[in-house]
Image (cartoon, rainbow, N blue to C red; front, side, top):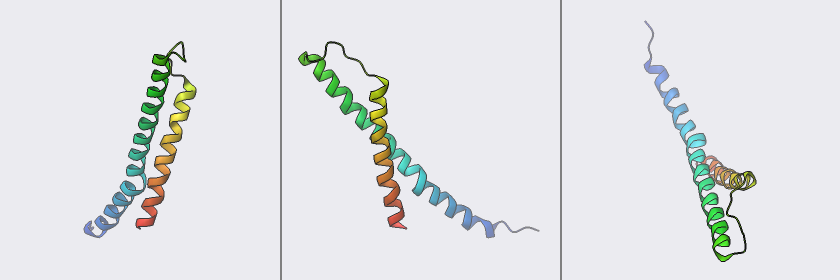
Length: 85
């Protein structure tokens, strides 16, 4: 008969590490992407309202800029997760 209780602790440790090292930083990365997008869209819309920009548009390059927010937020939380362990 195989005893599965012996394997439960390593599985829980892997789940906890996955959550702390991958899932939480990924969620913070998404928050960073959304935050950058909101600031960028608000700035472009404000420029449109003031009249400095004739057409309000969000381009693919703007999305690439928002990815910077994702990677910065992800890296900050990723590095913090290693400092905790």
